[in-house]
Image 1 (cartoon, rainbow, N blue to C red):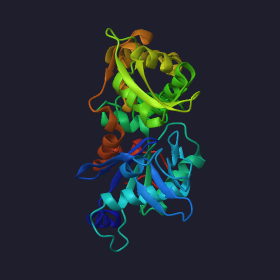
Image 2: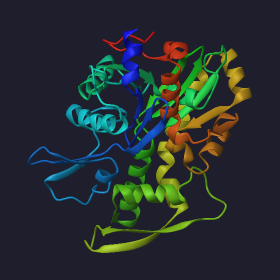
Image 3: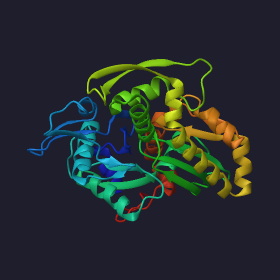
Image 4: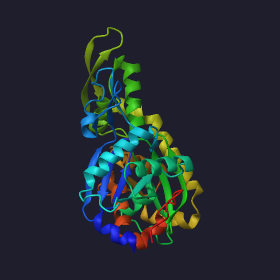
Length: 350
């Protein structure tokens, strides 16, 4: 009864706290924030200078005493204090009602599957320090599946691959829970790193993270394209030390990412091998569903189709699936409370 009274004064929030991007869903309003998980800090004073989009613009362009960092690594907290400040910024921006009578919002946070209890506790503590009244965790594959409107509470197999910035989550879900899963530290950021390394080795050109990401998005593909694409790439020549521009091809980018993509496909095959036959029969009919920003890589669905011999579908608006799923849980806490992960100190709302 007290929680219901407090809910009148608060706007409960669901957060997809991603390695690369964070999204915030406010109950009754939808997704109100979609910004990079980057914080710019003055190392001399400890002052936070910018968070989100403004901080990302500073990456690779700051003096030595200003550092633009990502406080999450592979979906888990690596810098507690910076994560707390980033969460506080998101909460204050999203929460329009005044905090009166102790009416701070309840928050649902998406976490990778398979994280340790210590890592769960770090997320919970950071959110509470940032101003949450109660914190509830939900595993990202579950949230993504709910956001994709998959029938996860039915006794049938739902196969989902969520490729984010820091991790790839592969899960088979049935009756509201994960039957088998794998979590890999190989996702969008690793593919960008692969491009940086490849360009260094082949062209002796040093490029930045943003340049690699832009090339990956514009001409990157998981399989050879019918028409080879090209794009200019600027950086510093490692031999002469001078600026240089080269033309890179889509085949170069594919080769750069090939090893990491093979690791993802091998993990998908291993998950299929661990899936009970009855659930696998459902997956063969309904297909594998792709979510997350990595799902937008050209020809990735075709590659997975070749490897698994099963239908592969990219869900509508894959980037926001986890946040939308957390939002659905917020709007229907009574019906969906069983899908929440129990935290160390919190209780699943009733």
